[in-house]
Length: 259
Image (tube, rainbow, N blue to C red; front, side, top):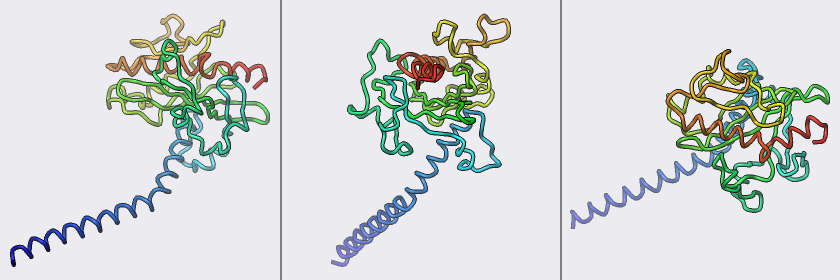
């Protein structure tokens, strides 16, 4: 009997500890959730600022982001859709892409970025000087080697010259595909051009290095050494999101003052 009682007490103590620990962990998760959401939003905005060449670590992200205007664009029409989304700040277009009511399937022959589905509405981020748009920052995403890379590309007021590119989420191999985070590689994008005179997306990531002797160097960026599939993924998502199925109609409307 003593042995049996000891066993029961051991089980009782173990169960009690499990319950107490579960309550502590659950409580901590609930209490920390608002802080986690706030930090995620802060990091998201920081990456927008960095892509646009606006991030200053000596200033708060909140103050810097005050210069950025968030708008909603209908990807089918290429025009602003201010009434399409009730809460623009909270709108998550990646989640919307998984909702059949908020997205459309991407035909296989067009799905070079491996998206499967594309949201109907996208956020865009504008930096203005009065009524003039100085910068436009566009969200992009697509599959690399191991993961979907999610980031931004920023364009100057001509809607053709690249200011910067950066990713806020990916799962690529550190030292290889993970070099998309390398400041030296990201710096290569500055000043590159997106469209040819005919309006085709010429911007591309190429194998090897690009120098002054490279034909059409203004459209080309060095590939990532040892990371061909990630480089291809970046190239494909650029061509998709800046093409006719992405933001090209919107950028054309901006140029013509018709957005």
